[in-house]
Length: 309
Image (cartoon, rainbow, N blue to C red; front, side, top):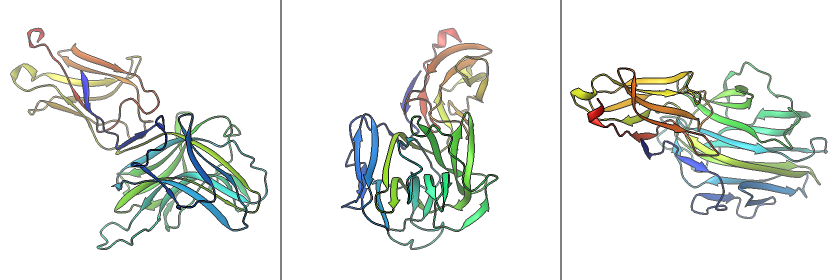
């Protein structure tokens, strides 16, 4: 079995530096620096003004409004310094759904941020859009205490069931909801951002393994059609093989569509198996590493030897 198409709209590890065809630095003359180093994107600098200074590394491509943006970030900086700052990821939109002429250049959207905000330190949401509903958590999540040394996974995710955008921080195996749900926009750009307010405020953040995907897209496994494949199923099991994560019968078109758990951390590990009457005829074990692994929307082609059916 081989993957013939990735479901990830973007899978960026910055191994080749900051690709100017994929990313742009905003503004053109930022007061803070942006550079790709050690397979990370680093935003850093010291503010020389009492008002906000900022820098964003923004995707050049617009993505569908139904995507999720996930990244890992580490913040080796002093939370106790005076002034305020915020670093995080954002999906920026260009208008409300259905609007005939969305405002050009609008930066509305949802952002999950780590920093110091209105006297509170920790994780919070920063968005100019009006909230639709409050998350079942505090508005500012206190720091875990290891943000300077450990990469934390954060997510701005489209919820298909609520038709809104939500922001999360991963703690252990659980996504913790931050802030409020926001209305989605027509199309989205990804942004990795840093800002500071106050003379002498130092900012330093590293981003890695940035990925964009649509969590509700099924994994498609092409098996083949005909009477011989009538009883075949495709199973995605956990890496240890003890748990079935998704299963689907092969349809009349010769393909199986597997719906993955939308709250999983993607890319994920697992074993894809094509089975007939309980017997595996083709199998592939996939280990997630960095931005590589199984994504919603992946397309795989199975190789089933018909003489074994």
